[in-house]
Length: 167
Image (tube, rainbow, N blue to C red; front, side, top):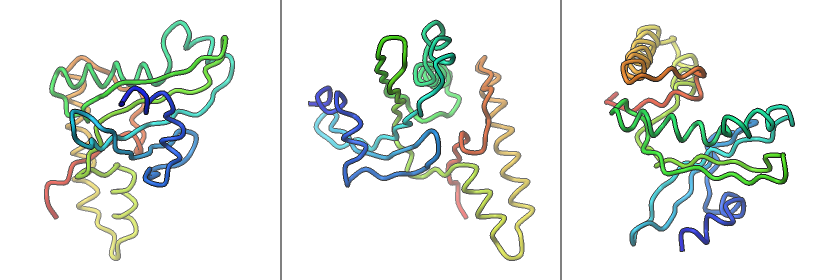
């Protein structure tokens, strides 16, 4: 049942039950998948199309989806605090990467650093002390990744996930 659903992942991502979390060239979409007799909340990162030069490079070193899955598996194995990875899917049309997706367990209690920063900057008065706490939290997470033998290379605010630990 699960494999049949994943075979047509674009339709599943466009279904009314799918929830778009972030937009842009790469989209994050929350869906639920049937796994072991229950509904598992899943975050799907749908990577946008890219130039033929990047496709050529990715044929040799792996797509963004594949590299994201490998990085998440590496971090999860070492307890570095990443959402549990599920897998990745990609579809090639000849030498062109037509579609690629990364799937991980959805983290209901987490927010991106970007959203947390926007909330702080929109507050009146601005919450500078909370801003510093967020930066310290990100630094500690980066330290855990480095201690696990991993260099991220793309710590954009949309790629940092924060778990809530209270008000």
